[in-house]
Length: 502
Image (cartoon, rainbow, N blue to C red; front, side, top):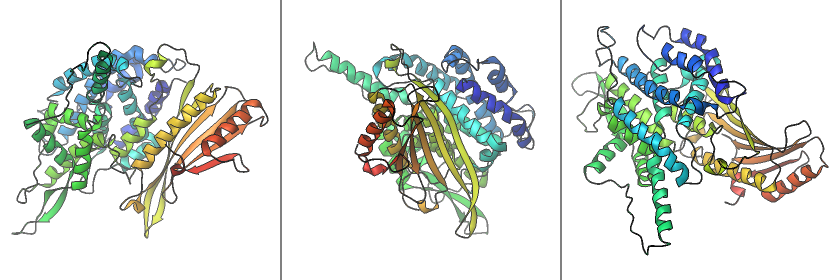
């Protein structure tokens, strides 16, 4: 089944439960990122064939681009409407306006146009227009699944209560803008290739491509980094019993984000783009002076904006590790990695590859578990994918190498650190390598397991109806070479991730 069709259809099935869930929040006439207008586009206008390949969505690219702009606009309208400091919630004669969306749309159009240059500029560049739309769909699917369970659980901070529509708007912002800085990051590679080519006929070619910042730009960027690296602390007023909030910098976050900006990582660049172009962020209230106090709604609005920026910046900043599945940073990392279907490398545009990729879904199991005398929410999360028609040794090793690289990334961002004893999730990634499409095929089942209790390990299981066949023996030899050991009695190879050399 077409993966996009299946995803949209599953969201459609969740709509009745979602409508019931938001009936005490939504006000007639207020736009939000899953309103009737969006539903009409998703469920009727896009109109995918369930039996088509996963590239059919590119025939609807103009619809996707229009929807991108509309969703950003609706997200701002939603967040402004529920901001108690604004007049809209209590005055139906006024209506929020999404200032700056035209400027952001102008940037987005340039971003889309630059895609063609990036496809030729770097060997492993892939689509980032349809990709962000699919990431958004994946997140919506997870948030609405099981009667909106994750949508209910996901939160920002104890000091910031948000309703379902605000959460939906925040996720829409995060998913659709998280890669806006990608062309700025990759453009340097194009300049590097140009310089390398010119050395063939020009001695010491002088080509400048400086993405560094200076002067007032550095000051503006530093302000945004400090904003997303801060938190609110309650403080009692000296002359009465009232409590207000003060902003406090979290130095570890600041240094990690500064390091990410130094590397021109596209996550932090994306956050800077939306902060500078959208009035919604320019109106943010932030100051760390000791005598600068925030009211409760000021603090709440700070957290909403900070969470959007922090989630976008964190997805390319592996210095930040994650302990909680109930936040938007975790959700973005999960959906961003899982979205692999229908994304070709430039090298695949000229070759009819027999390899077939199938995304089998993100699986989330939620339960209660006793911890420290309290019942806490715990999740078991896995990403499941399959590669078919893999017959060559080089292809098996290539997929295994890619699997190890991704495993190391997960091990880094889900690593043990301060207070990670309270981590509330286990994570697994399963990749099936299948040499055919019939019942007699030989399969390698690769699995990464990041556990709260044990060291991260990688395992491979060989499954074959004919263990003595040529392919079975060949695959077994490959796995023995890759793991540096023979399998156990169950035909399973297991190593700690650290046992594999890079």
